[in-house]
Amino acid sequence: MKLIKGQNLLLIFQRKMIKKEVYYWPLWFSQILTPGDRQKIKKLLPKLQQAQIYLWQALNIYDDFLDDEAKKENLPIANKYFRRYLEIHYRAGLSNDYYKLFDRIFNNLDNANRKEVLALHLKVKNGKVIIPKRMNLKNKINKNNPEDATHGVISLSKKSLTLALGPLALLSYLGDKSSSPRMKAGLNFFQHALAAKQLSDDSHDWLEDLKKGYISLANAPVLDASQKQKIQIDLKNSSEMAYCLFAEKSAPQLISQIKHQCQQARQEISRISSIENNIILNKIIRPLETACQKAESFRELLVK
Image 1 (tube, rainbow, N blue to C red):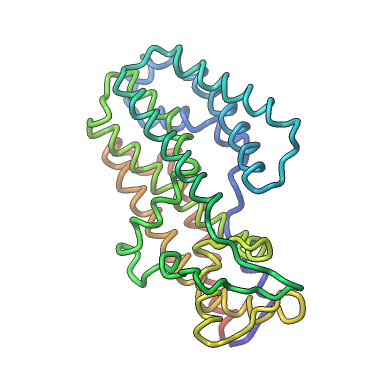
Image 2 (spheres, rainbow, N blue to C red; image 1 turned 180 degrees about the vertical axis):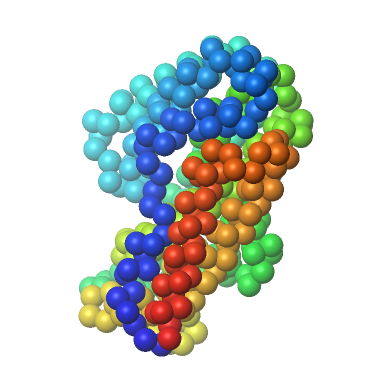
């Protein structure tokens, strides 16, 4: 396999969500609804958009604490953002059914954060990656069939699925219960979309995560291959091998799974609206699909 600056492959994958973009999620979601529904939610919509920004800011700061990269003085700021977010949602006067969904999604976030904190980490000594003997990489390896791997991948959305509550609150305000077809489709859409986004982020950060000792679906195949082939990953003196393993083992799985999640997201939106060329797909899903196409083309050159 020929190496052509493997790190360029990383730049093709979509970077993390732009902070300003998340503000528009409730607006974009509203635009796939009927004109009558859009009129009914007109007053609530700006409040939910502002809430999105508050939550986004709070989650970013909290994530910094989980990664041991936060400044202590930022914690009160994050708490302030989160309180404002909660205030908007609880003053919206939505149904008890919605608030049960609200609590369940935040409980899932808490559990995901707890799991992340307690997870085993790699040891990196002088650039050499050491895999603990009791570490099981099997749960981090995607199967060949994206359908088989979907359940595990969907769990990636738990860290950011709270951001879907703004758009879903619009449906609740219109009278949809959590068991309604539209609410289920809306929740499923964001699960697939956010799982795809997380895979894309992990694809971009796979090497940085490896250096920090973090294991993700993006770098686990690299580690698994290095174990099977008895290759010592040395990020300081011979990082080219890690790039080669990423291009050969990780990239095909990641591209396949991201494409699958995007396809599933499109199917779920079609259950709410028959508009094919709608803004929420164009803004959230299409950039991921485009990134996959570019990554596939580049990988073909890389492995020739």
